[in-house]
Image (cartoon, rainbow, N blue to C red):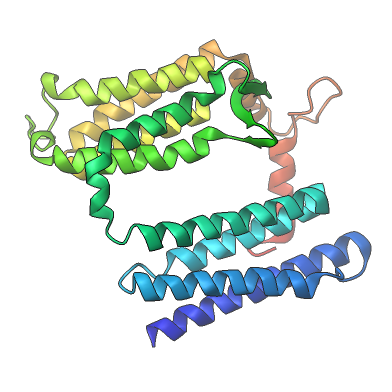
Length: 300
């Protein structure tokens, strides 16, 4: 019953994506896109095949993740088609299918995730290389004040998006192996001992390196935030969360003081209702999003 329930959920999400794509065509051109059948069959069949592989290879896996990913991916495609047109939308649809293929290949090749424990530091090194790839001369380049992008031949991408996956796998394996050491604490809140703060300070230093080398506050704080949360989950010590929160706030303050484009984004938030000007189009964006949400409602 559970299997058929998940398959019905995926089918409903595929129909929802099809409806969203059709509404985009009606809103932009007053007609349903001519390729709507091909679009729906391609996306729907791809997700159903992925679901079939999951049920065959990992029947005890969480049945919720794939339908949620399908729903978010489909809504994202509809928004891209609406905002930037079919050329970019078609490219993103292809990347979505590539992502599904990579997902299926991963669960076919890695039947037991515990085998990754033998490659803990190699995985961490790969993640670190991907995270810092945008600073390599001739490979990375700056866009909108942050150096996040890299190009390898005809492919342009954000290496950090892939690096995050490797970093999380590395942290999961490393923290699992060091669980007993991390569980040691002092005080009522389980505050970590000074000698146990090394991994936390090392991760904070790495996040600051990402901040100053790539000028990207978001990736820096996300990297450190993920580390702190996983450290807390692995140790069960609230002290790691409190210490990490203080360092997280300090890193955010440093990023604000050091990077002008971060100051601009804070200014957009502080002056959300001010209209955009010719010289600074950032103002008013937050208010526009509020009005869009208010007009469309929860599901609009």
